[in-house]
Length: 325
Image 1 (cartoon, one colour):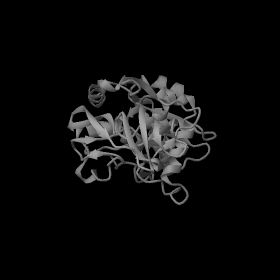
Image 2: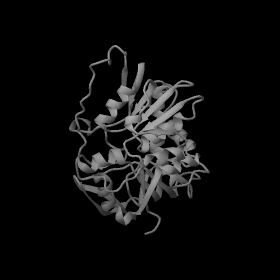
Image 3: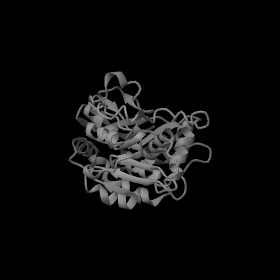
Image 4: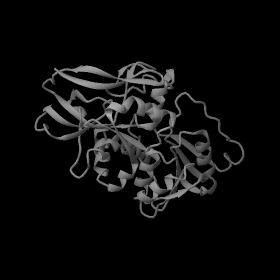
């Protein structure tokens, strides 16, 4: 039996590291030694604060979550490690798993995804964000030459923007209240605008701001008969919108996108594993390193999670280094 260190949210706003026993892998399992995990700023902040609505607690469970919302709960889903035991020819391979912050773990071999050659292990923690971005764009279905706005330059919004910029002729602008995000957008090869300068008449607008003001700006930025795809998740926060004025005369459409299901346009031909494999392959793109904006030792994780949740630790994707005991 292996011993491991895991991060738990003990109560809303407070987390600790716990020592845990990891069972030996069965015939269909693998034992993975974690190298890196990533903090999903939006969702994990809500979990850390205890802000998962009661109605969504079952739907929002992570695949290998332990405990229940609001706490105590072991949560997370951006984990990259190396297979130590088990699996046919998998030993020594770098893999991604939707596993919480923990130094070692055993999961079915079918639940891991191989990290392709050319994708550094630390960058691979972004697989969850890029997978979400893939699903958002499957939902949004941009066309050649579309004028696209992405409201919110967080991890998801930036991943969406980078992928959307690959459509021929696409004009992609990211809108955010933080002027420091302009430098990240430059590295991603997309334009940046402050809310006051947000372009109008966008064919497609994707809201990834997780703010009431951002979603309203997304609606106001859409062209007549344009579409707003909402990738934000607001947890237990109510959202007020102005749907008067020209909202109806402009015949706008507001649609949700959520990674928990494969987008309807691809559900008949793509499984979850296909979508994740595509995301990992897309991470061969070095530009995604711009989203890795900080790193800390696993020993600092309780304090780092609190700082990320409070906003004292600004980051797109803050990674946790588990390589040293």
